View (cartoon, one colour):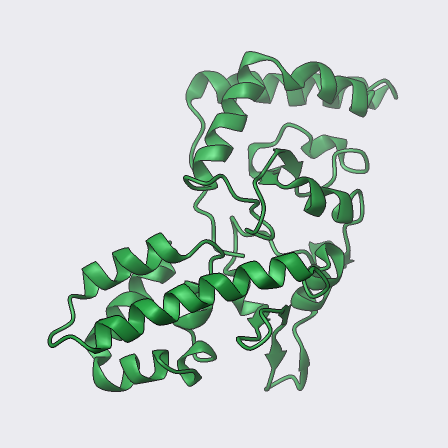
Length: 247
């Protein structure tokens, strides 16, 4: 997972989406919302096609799933599932882009801690605050909170819901990306003076799975060659950390 920067919709698309939600809310009050049929009918309209286009742009040049980042994203995903939460069906902040596999695993399941979602929303929070990466196996798992003495609950729920630790192809993809990132840093360390901006540009081009957020965290900094970069070129390291945090 990586942090996704949410773009704003153009006024015309935003207004059309708001009208659709108002209509759904009104019909829902009399028990006639018809979530599945309503969404199917709206899906090929100009305003939903425009929403889809913005989401694809947010997902990056390869239009990867905003949850697993290993597969091509195929359709609009409702973070809060539309059937149990029809009041969020057309809400822009509730719409993501996901692959068919993540969509199938998630379905209408949506664990809550009280009223707060336990699934990580990549457009709202840094996923690596709740997730961890095992660099020898490529497995994504819940992050362990040393202070609380337990795994992060949001990490546990997200990994379980999307089966991030059980998808072999996904782990292989993460390992390939991690290998490219390591090679880029190792290559830079063999040069004289590092250009921080050039290094970061190359790393971002190689990062298909949002791993830079992990590599430049305290956890990733324990692994070579990232620990060497931080020890030998602290200004470059700090520049990368700050820029990655900005998204």
